[in-house]
Amino acid sequence: MVLLQSLRAGFETLQVKMGESVSEYFSGMMAIENKLRIHGEKLEDLTIIEKIIRFMPSKFNYVVCSIEKSKETNELSIDELQSSLLIHGHKMNRQTSKEQNLQVSSNYNSSKGGATEYKRGRGNNF
Image: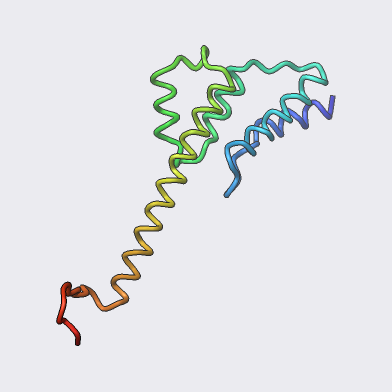
């Protein structure tokens, strides 16, 4: 009984940690869900989905809102939710990477003293 209460509390308080991936969060969530099931407590998929949606970091707000608007959460599977969040996470990482590359490029060009003049053709030996 105490173990079951401890697992329930772990389920209720499990949140995405700083730097934790969607896959890691889902793995932790499903590990707790499996332990609960082993000890006789079955969680409905809807309960798990609502919990996951409630505790996703703010950077996932617009995908969570989109999921809630486009699909009935009671018709959504855990795998579909995980796929949607993983795809969104990958897109955000690519976008962040592109922005960082542009920032580095911009910083490099500005460190050269601003605009650089390039001359073409023959006879421009300076």
